[in-house]
Image 1 (tube, rainbow over the protein chains, first blue to last red):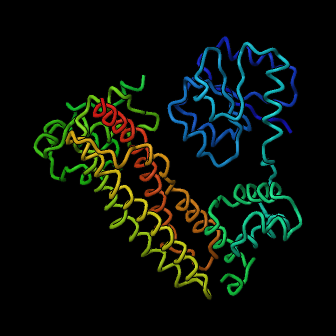
Image 2: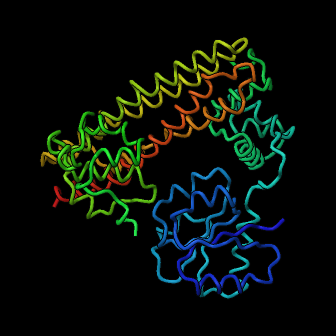
Image 3: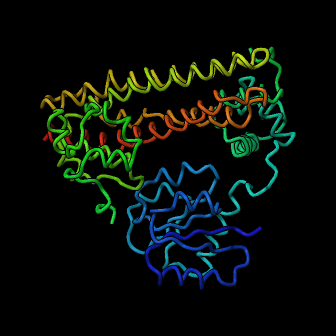
Length: 190
Length: 232
């Protein structure tokens, strides 16, 4: 499964350089790059990249990067001094002065930490359904973890997948979803 | 590049609205009534007692997704209209948009079996309560603070850092509602109410995103500046 990489960077020289660095890396597919954020929102919807490698100086509106439904790693592409604070919103940082292996390593790291979202199956798995039912009953992550005998981390990861599949983030919204799909009995709610 | 696309005050207001009809809903909130004929934006603003620069700033933000006004742009604009505009927007959401959505949801809920309808309605009621609380926090704390600062008073009871700390997202649950309504309602409620409510939710969600943007990208920098100016 190739990681789809979208580069947003004004300099053609830098883009060509990055493409050359990643040329023999079969795990990345470099999408047609953009020079600025003008049509980024539409491109994100259409191209659904797994990794967005973006020059922080072109970012006019950070919310576009995060409001996106698909979980996507956002990596800063820097080649000059950037304030440390400005980088805290990114999942990782690639400096063009990094060595070739370091750049590849950084991109590989963010891609493994991503939730697996490229499955075509949007049905909830049995485990996800079990988590959803407990959530709808008002249980906390810890309580769900104990009840299902898994770690809190696993519960959180299931919740991410549930939200990704349904498009619903709030517990209240997920409760309505669970009822509409007959996953919970009306009486088990209160 | 972005600047050249922004509106100017010499153009006719009617041309602006024809090109971007969604701006119509902003006019009343900005203090401009319909019936402006073929007059220029500057002309209409002047006779309505609205600062043209402020009017254009808000229209530009609503129209161009990538447009973020710079601090000099903000400080160079007469911002006395900001708080009244935000207050009117709150009333518009609470008194006009939300009841619209509620009416459609009530009709949808009646077609749902068992307690499903009730669950849908209580989800919406809870959301409405959160929105009202969110707005009333701003109206009771943030807006008086801005008014005091603009009047040159030193107001130390509140600062904008506290606002940033508590400013929560009010669009998220609306997006949840959207997904529930158009993806997961049983087919028997497939009627005009569903389509109407989907359009209403999409419109409100877009509007609220811009509202949040104006608060975070215009109001906050403005207040930070006013706070610093008054302390020094």
